[in-house]
Length: 430
Ligand code: ATP
Ligand code: CA
Ligand code: CA
Image (cartoon, rainbow, N blue to C red; front, side):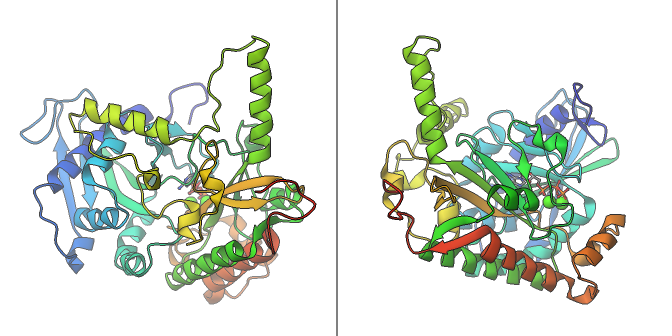
C-alpha cells in the first residue's frame, strides 16, 4: 500500500479490483435467478463456478475497461441459503454490492488485507489468504449447522466467497456483515483478544482520526470496565460462550471482539457545539451525524433501486432499518430493546451501557477474523514469544486456552454487571 499513491493489492490497483468484483458478483447473483430454491445438499458446499470476463464482453458478460479477468463464486447455492436465513433478498444483495462504488477502509490489521465497504453500509468485503478461503470452504457445513440452529450469534455472518483472478494472481474475497455503521460516530473502537502481549495500538494507528485500540489501551481507558444491566450482561456473555464453543470445536484462534462505542453524552455535547456554531452563523446547519441513519439509508437505497430499474416495494417499517436481519448488536445477543430506541435522534441497535463516569454508551460489537485455524496457523516468530508470555505452552490445548482466556477477559475485565444503568447518582434515564 503506497502512501499517497494508488492503493494496490498483489500489485493490482484497488479500483480495478473493486470494479471487477462488482461485475463478477452481479453476474453470479443474476445467474442464481434461474436456479430454483431448494433444500441444501452436501455438494452445494463444494461447488465452484467460474466465469471469464473478456474485454469485449460475451454472451453472458458485459464489455468492460478493466484487465481481463476470471471470477470464481464458491458454493453459490449454499451462500444464497445463508443470505436467505438473514432475510437478504437477491435484489437487495445485488443493489448493495453492485449499484454504487465500494469504499475502501483503512485496515489496522497486520495481515495486509484490504476491506471494502458497500455504499449503503451493510456489507464488508475482505481480501483473505488462500488458506483462509480454503478454511471457510471446509467450515461451511458446520457453520451452516450452527446458523440453522441459532441465527442469533456474534460470529461473523458470511454472505459470499469469491476469487478474482487476473494475470495469474488470485484475490480471494469474503462478503460479510458490517458491524460498525459509518453513520454512527464511534467515539472509541477496540479490537480485543484477552491477551496482553503486544496488545497496544501502534503509534501510526493512534494518530488516525478513528483508531482501533487494543486490550492494553482498553484497560487504560476503562480501568473499571464498561457497565451493563444484569440481563444484558448475561445475554451477551451467554452468546459469547456459545460462539466460543463453536470456534473451539473448529480449532479456531486469534479471533477478536470488535467493540465500537458511541458515547451518547459526547454526541449530545458535539451537537450542542455544532448548534452554537450555527447560531453564531459560522457554519450552515449541516445535519449532525448522530442523526438516525434510517432516512439516509432508505433514500440511497430507493434512489439506487430506481437507477437499477427495480421497483420500490418495501414499506418503511421501523423494524427494518438494516437489511441484514438479526444483525444489530442487540439482536445478536437476543436482548430486549429498551425504549431508548424510540427516542428520535438516538441510533438504534446498539447495546446500552455506561462507563465509569456514568456516561451513556451504545455498544456495537461482534466477533471478527475467525478464519485462522490452529492447524493452518503460520509459525511467526512472535507467536512463540506470545505463547510463553501467555503461559500457554501445551499446544493441543491452545484453541481451548484461547477461548477460555477470551471469555474470562470479556466477562471480568471488559464488561461489568450492575443492577441498573440508571444509578441513583446519575441523572436521567439511559
Ligand atoms: P490481522 O490478521 O492482522 O489481525 P486482518 O487483516 O485479518 O488483521 P481483521 O482482524 O479481520 O483484519 O480486521 C481488522 C480491522 O478491520 C478490525 O480491527 C476492525 O477495525 C475492522 N473490521 C474487521 N471486520 C469488520 C466488520 N465485520 N465490521 C466492521 N469493521 C471490521
Ligand atoms: Ca485480527
Ligand atoms: Ca487475520
